Image (cartoon, rainbow, N blue to C red; front, side, top):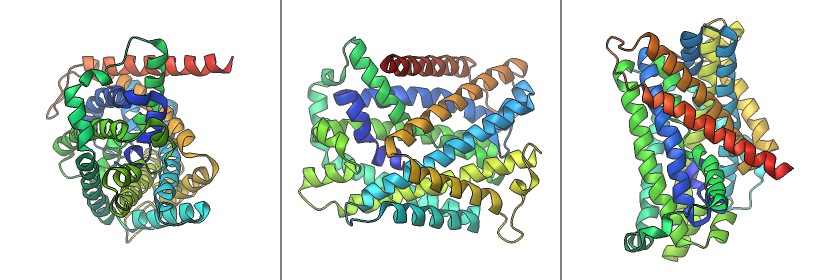
Length: 385
């Protein structure tokens, strides 16, 4: 619940307009269907390097599994760029800070915490998440008049069957999808989770459903609290909503936004490093990526590499471009995970000690993602020619 909702809800509105909540619903469908695949596969194979392990088990092609693992690492690296740029946006509410200096400091601090240990990192992430949820509930409360108006005329948010409108909604959904990225991170620290056969599926599905509910309500509050043009122009939209609806300084929500985004930076560094660690443990990458510190028990080399590359992307590309690049990459990975789940379920439909979901979930998830990616690529090519 970091930059995706705290900084990108305005950018989603810039594409989808008043139908930004619909864009979040479309993004949620993409996430939920794949979430069931991750829930089952993480219980079947609770090991670091999740997606690469799943594709290896399904297809037995080492090179494909390595590419999938590297794609996940790449998405984490680019996501660090999204989050650090969002961090700058919220910090500039208070101070005219140097973008480059803040980005560098944020990445370095998160990397040090990630290197220090998984228990410390998990505690920090859990604490930040509680703060983030409180921030979203605060925005819902101060923008409650928009929710009351929704109950009067819900048809306001029902989009017409118009190609132009739906093109904007799907463009917004691609950006909104970034807000849902993160539940798969749990699958990649499976070896550090107690009772993963039970806890990983429960945690993944709870994360998706709770975030879906909060995001959709926040999207409604956002488009009913501010004009679309003003909302889409802000890099700290929730702080702006708080300021306009209460008439007070957005100190509280800005600090919460900073906590939320810092949490995301930390989680993405952990994710990327654990993927490289898992690939090395499978002998698919050089041995140094799999080495752990003798005292801290964390993959220092992998963590440092992910942090450095994340810093480079953060300084290179703007916020929305980074978010879209991350979403495209993750959607490709999700398509492979769903395909792997279908293949594994056909071969072994009833695994012992693991809850199996209907095969229609991963199959439909694969088809929906491929259709979505195909439509977006067609839209991009159409705009170019």
